[in-house]
Amino acid sequence: MRLSGKRAIVTGGASGFGEGIVEKFVQEGASVLIADVNGDGAEAVAERLGNETFACQVDVSSGESVETMARIALERFGHIDIIVNNAGVSHLPMPMDEVDEDQFDRVFAVNAKSVYLMTRYLLPSLRARGQGVILNVASTGGVSPRPNLTWYNASKGWMITATRGMAVELAPQGIRVNALNPVAGETPLLATFMGEDTPEIRAKFLSTIPIGRFSTPADMGNAACYLCSDEASMVTGVCLEVDGGRCI
Image 1 (cartoon, rainbow, N blue to C red):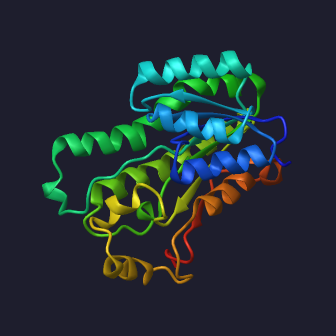
Image 2 (cartoon, rainbow, N blue to C red; image 1 turned 90 degrees about the vertical axis):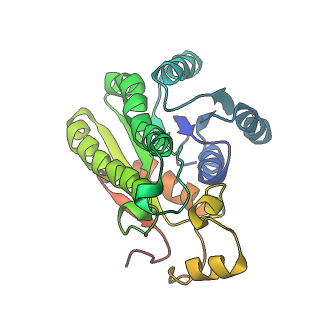
């Protein structure tokens, strides 16, 4: 029960890595707000995991929506201990100059602006208590970029730099900030990364991962639990690869 009594928000918590993080947090004693643009999906996860969770539909790229979610969370929990910025999107693999402006704007609104908005509306709760943890879910793409996902890679590189800057600024206030860099996993984004889900493309993708498999939601939940627990009280500004050796 490493997160016993902790109150957490996980964005993109209705599926994929986010759902794995929510599940692990609940197992370790946390109460979790499952924040997702897919409200029905968030409700389904909350119903499955029980009374220590509740769902809130939110568009993390919208200041008004995030502000409303933050108010609901604070009314329900009183304060927040852990913020997990997991929600993310990508564009399909294509030459960088073929990504249209709407796709570009959406990638940066969801992957980058959301971190700013979540910080703006929830940091005061952490700061008031002089403690807390923020965990950003970035990507190996921000460390070792793949061709044809340039703007997605750039958005995750932004998140890695933001994580380190946030960590330095907030450490004197008792707030730790870290990131996870997963390789692609069995999540709704996998088909987006590959462009087409075929055995041949999967084999090519897996050939770049020394351990020989994709990241799983459980892998992410385990890593997130450590970084958000008191066991990691001396760890801040770290961007941890959970990638089976992909970035070596």
